[in-house]
Length: 461
Image 1 (cartoon, one colour):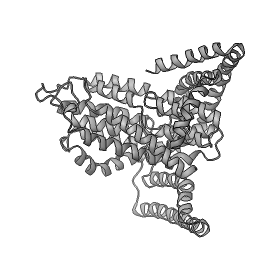
Image 2: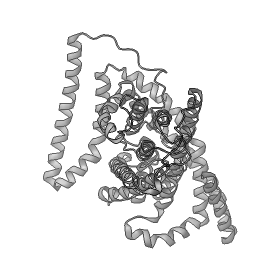
Image 3: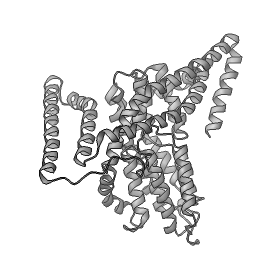
Image 4: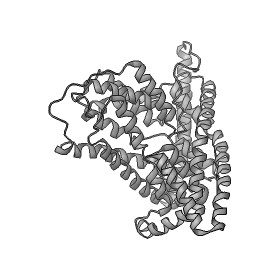
């Protein structure tokens, strides 16, 4: 699909420029060199931010925060997937997949997701049809709530010179809540419909995929999935990790916990003083919005460092290990970013993009949606790398702190690459008919889009 989209972008640019005349052809040619240069500069500016925050995510990884989240999710999972036994390997794989996605560790989620689909296939009564558990799992996976900041998007905003790169965190979190809630609701509403019912009698699915096949699929998926470039969890837990902790005496453990409690008490006191001052000055709504925008990031940093310290993680070593991964991620996204950024830049230079936006804008502006963000909304379900390029081009043109730039960046994190997720995960399980999985994911995409629009109007209008 991305091949066709890219070909249409470049071909339409050349044809539109040829129709306009030699002067426009010159602008299109010039845009190739300018956008290629700006893409590389963008990645260079992105590296520093990624090194620090992927290192921070490595601390959370080494401290076992993902296991803690998985334990919190266990009671909910048993209600959502009653047909999967609590002690079945599929349940543990789904738990780790959801925990990884919630913590923003997209690349780590892929192996667990593939393992979960393989195990769900062993419970499936219909060999080529998706079971209810498979459909619901993919609906949640493709629209997963992400509690931690979308580091890749924030890094791009910082590299583009944003005054507040983290401003899109809360809108993105709200958008992912909307998309996940819509995906689950769509699953329960569509499941009883006869059109999506599996055949009454079919041969049980044979879990014939060998461990080698699954490993190969996992490796391929990890190489392809550049949709979330800023994730630290593609680090192999068996790789370079923090040194093993030694036994602590009782007084050392008490001192460590006391320091953590003292730090949080001091921090919360400062937050309370600032909140009270904003409330007295401009009211509760302003104080609440200000607290979300300005205090959530420091709270996250302190929480991760304090949790790692309390779990006796060598925080400096973990930061360095995560930073090395950031350099590898940055090198992987350069060709994707350059190719897409050049194609969109050519389309804009030819005048074709402005013509399309002019036709759509009277309709979308009534909904509070600038037509300039529609290319992002359309390409996000198809390709993560393509969406990253489109987002970079839009914020370069309109500015990272404009409303268009804010909404575009929020859309980047509102949902997953739907068609990629369905293709890879159903392929891992040997499923031919996904029933209502695609429709659930598309409903989630629309809900994420609307949630992003509403959140951006609340925070930035």
